[in-house]
Image (cartoon, rainbow, N blue to C red; front, side):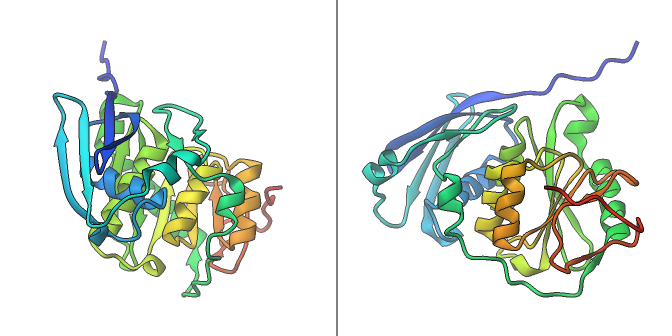
Length: 253
């Protein structure tokens, strides 16, 4: 009888300018991308240029980062930590109130057809080697203006999103040209990460939470859920996705 391999996760300590931020459960793949994405998503850096050095020691389970500028660790510690739900549990320093202060998305480009996003969702699945090997991994991908897909995977859905954001930062990709797609539930911290980078369209093969949709509507982010064919639900509508799949769709609350 064929058996899939087991998903891998390891405790890895992130240290920033000599200060320990937290211990994270991560899959040991594309860790440098994760560093850039996580620090950016949490507001600890504003661009890839803010990082001077990264030293990753997988055997010791540590990542040591040095920034180009001083880092106010006491200010960070004074902020309340919010532990994220789900596998590969992580921590965010942004509350829903904080996220509402982010810039609203104003990107206006040629809209995407929903049928196009469904096709890309299938390509995304076929380009996720860890999931295909274990069946127990999350993935996130970006789709550029030419239809190219870049995938990052991790045991945690939010870690996978941080990895793909980190990749986009390091490659200096333009946010207005990208769609974010994920296998995981879209919760408020996921919308937080998307909003911080400036994604205008976020799609998932599963659901979005009510809190996430409240934020998405406030920040003008197009959210598509259950991207699996006829089940697809356009939760929000800002004219960036044309529904050519269904005559009518149930909108999220």
